[in-house]
Amino acid sequence: ESVLYIVGRADLICLVLVVLAALVYTPCVSERVRGPFAVLPLLLSSALIVAAGLCKETGFCFFGLIAGCEILRGLSFSGGKRSQWQRCLRFGAIIIVGSISCILRVWYTGGTTIDN
Image (tube, rainbow, N blue to C red; front, side):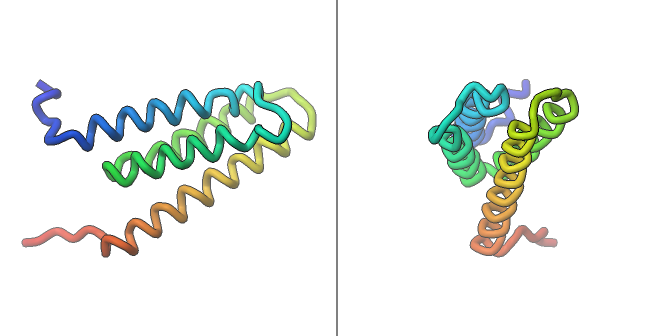
């Protein structure tokens, strides 16, 4: 029954892009990527989330899920200061990119109004 409520392809494209973003971002959270390429998963997953948000507004919510994942991972973390610093930088980048993309989308579309 819930499949019947999918109006078009936008929901499915948003879902695929969000799942891809999660798969790309997973090495960031587990800190398996080191060196100069450590920022690439963050950039690619942010681009995928922005693309998902442009398909369907709910795609932008995944920025919040990734930020929550970083917070929870930081609470259960017992590593060094460098890893904690990198986590804070990733968290800040997620919040900044997510906020800018949402603000730009609302500015471009003029927001959402309810017609009576």
